Amino acid sequence: MNDDAPPRDDTQMGRVKYFMSKMFHGVKGDDPTCAEYWLDGVVRILSQMGCSDEDKFGCTVSLLMDEAHR
Image (cartoon, rainbow, N blue to C red):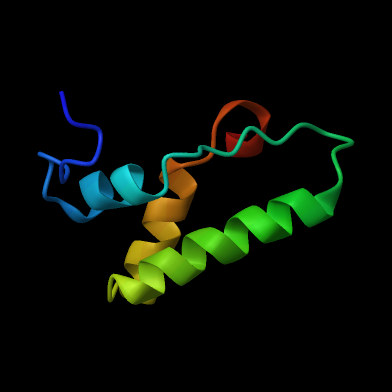
């Protein structure tokens, strides 16, 4: 399978997961700068995709994992 192939899931979230494959697993006590850099990158990608602010919020929340999602 070609890793460079476009995502089969052509929904907004499918494209986000394809281009922003790194989920955020924040842990209490982590350096908040890491979260800021991750969030800046996600917002930049979503802006380039033409997402509304509401879609940016929903997509970003869906990329949070573990303690970061609580």
